[in-house]
Image (cartoon, rainbow, N blue to C red; front, top):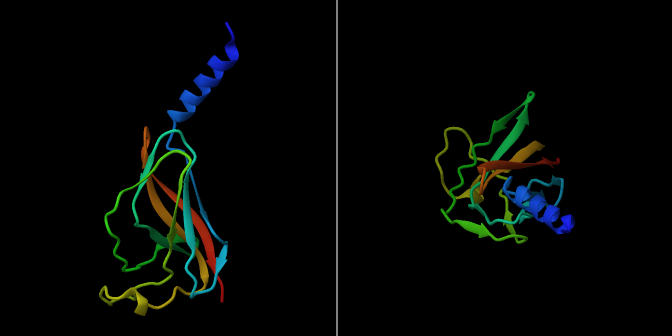
Length: 140
């Protein structure tokens, strides 16, 4: 009996059982304040992954990550990525000032220069949901 195909099948099954397997990336590492980064999620696994449109932004401040109050509202869509497919989303680099109520994000101020990360929840079998993040800079 040939062991090569059996070993390959076993490796694929074990790899698939440790998912979800995905990659996230941004189109650049640094942005101007008026730019909108493009986030890409790629399913590199053997099983579908699920995600929504929502995301969180964090700013690096005094040695720790602090959540940015964006005031953004996302539709509750379920996006299913089959194996080896990708999905792109634009990220809004705005914040909702303290003591302000949610309104039209076009009128929110731009995020100040600094180090940030975008966090997105991605779900899949068998581990359930995990938070994926990508760091970026906003330049002067």
